[in-house]
Each structure stands twice: as C-alpha cells, then as structure tokens.
Length: 216
Ligand SMILES: C[S@@+](CC[C@H](N)C(=O)[O-])C[C@H]1O[C@@H](n2cnc3c(N)ncnc32)[C@H](O)[C@@H]1O
Image (cartoon, rainbow, N blue to C red; front, side, top):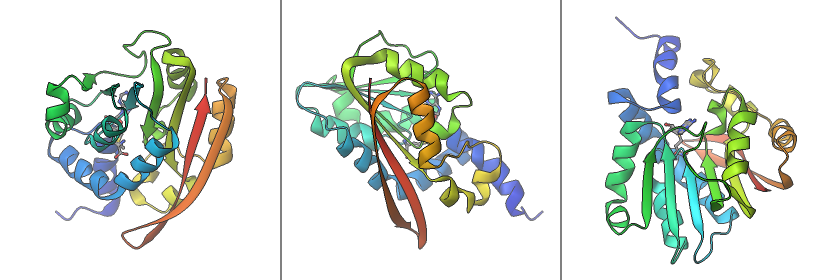
C-alpha cells in the first residue's frame, strides 16, 4: 500500500503535539533540524540572567533546556513536557546538567501546571501554543506561575506559512497571525506585549515566524 500524503499527514501531525514511538522519534528529528534557531531566538528574547529560575514548556528534544542552562548562571532551569518519549530524549541530551541539579525535567501537563504561583523569572514556549485548544486556560497557568516581574517568550510560525504544509491542515494545529495571537495574550491580561517577526529559510522554504515577549 502506498501512503498518500493526507494519510501521512494525519499520522504525523499528532506526533508534533505529543511525540511517541517510532513516529515520535521521526518528529523529534524533524524538529531538531528546523527549530534550534527559533528556540535560540525566544531564549535570547527573554533575557535570562544569573540566578534566574527558568521554565521551558514543551521542550521536545531538549536543546532549549541546554541553551537556557548556559545562560542562567547560578540559576535553575525546569522543563515541562507531557511526552514521556521527549522526557527521555531531553534527559539524555542534558544528562550532566540533570545530574548536577541545574536542569530539572518534569513529565507533566501545563494545564494545570505542577508548580507554585509566582515561581519563575522566565518562561519560554517554542512551537507549543498551536496545541492549546483553549489557549486562555494554558496562558492563565503561565501567568499564575510567573513571578510578578517575570517575562515569558513564545515562538510560533505564522498561520500563512503553516497553511502551506500538508500536516498542519489536519486539525491538530491552531494557527495564528501575529495579530490573532496578540489578541489572545491581551485577553489573558498580559501586559507590555512585544513581538518581532522574522522570515527564515528552512530546507528551501520561506517560513514567517513571530516571537512574543510578555510581562505578567
Ligand atoms: C512541536 S513540539 C516543540 C518542541 C520544541 N519546543 C521545538 O520547537 O522543537 C511540542 C512539544 O510540546 C509538548 N507539549 C504540547 N502540549 C503540551 C502541554 N499541554 N503540556 C506539556 N507539554 C506539551 C509536546 O509533548 C512536544 O514535545
């Protein structure tokens, strides 16, 4: 049997929401090839400093945890992801930092987040907001666990760029323009919403992405 692209898209799309098994490993490899520069962008944007307690939500393969740990001297980096496969992969990738207690990896869901209120100085989520069916619920959790002077950064690819891809049209992804995501953030009560838009070339394709920085 030859897999047509719709069938392949329907098989693969859920693996980006919550990777598992062999297809999840394929999705993780795909992410690693494309998302490192976007992760770096979001982490740079949120200005991690010495002593900060940082959370990456949806760390996937775990490169963002390593980048954040390199910036948070004397601080701690937590990771939260509900995929056991990604928890294993990220734990391997960050094994020395995990052993030293610098990186703490939690297998769990953002809604509700297993953290106390006002706990984090910085929160980063790259390519995760697409999977929140009721984004107000997840964003209010982020607001709850952010310190009063904390900042959160979100990266998401633009709706138009994502529309060009077969597997993003499967109903698994909620796509946003910059304006639509700004409205969602604003409705959740975040202040000082800044955003930057860049065009990146990934495997010969032009992808427009937005990085948002918000304050509690
Ligand atoms: C598309 S991957 C992005 C991985 C990485 N941030 C990147 O950009 O390469 C989405 C990740 O977020 C995790 N995730 C999605 N929704 C989540 C939720 N509600 N709580 C915890 N993790 C979640 C998934 O398990 C997956 O590892």
